[in-house]
Image (cartoon, rainbow, N blue to C red; front, side, top):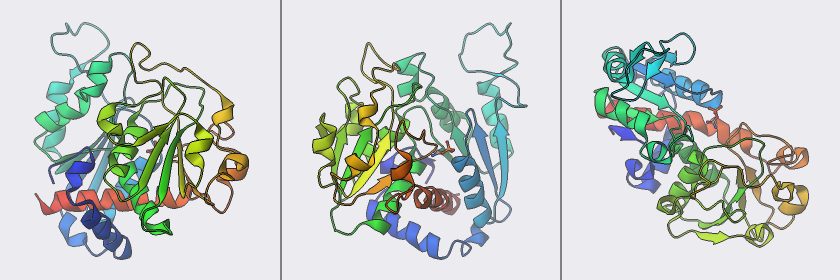
Length: 317
Ligand code: CP
């Protein structure tokens, strides 16, 4: 595996899930693969889970791990070609990336959507420059349009908790005070559309996601109807994708907050969220603290999804 940005990079999805479950059972059994190999994790944005779980995954595989926070201690980077660099940016990404590649064997990159230019975000301008210029295998640690390590962990978690062969999985928009990227719902849809689940997306009108990720999923604008009979409820906020509202907040309607009343419509569903989560905006205290909440188990599986991806990259060096 040379890149990991979406579900297709995993190939056979069932085989990937089985491999991940093997990794989970024997997470220190592959240490030889990472001996004298270095993982570089580059963060343009903050993180708790991704930083810790990916570093742990690298260590489980016997790798040395290095973390670079671009906005804390590194030179400020220019990302556009042709810019006269007489401002506050000291170094260009086009030199910085191959230099970073000199010091490591595999690179993980976190670079969120900036909501300044939809085309730049949806062309994954920063992530793709790492893929093109680093000379190393590159995986996304949440980029502008996708969070495939999260979605893989979500799928592993659904596999572990499902009670029927083909569970109903509902992705529901929920309110949030800030404009958030579509990366998590995009990747969740990308994965669920390839998994053996009955997948439904629900959101207020105006929050339609990129059709490239929605594909054949059922979209239901009535949240209560969508939640009926659900086995898994996956809550997430995102800002508008469709023009002319790209990156805008169109609603903060707390009638969409996942509450005990909403969960009562489901088939005793498990509650999922990628975290961090805003309580009593996205989900009530009662729901997230209930026995049906599997948000911590989901976060724990971030170590497993990362380890499975890095393992495959080590195997292909
Ligand atoms: N879910 C997730 O990616 O968490 P962090 O932003 O804390 O890494």
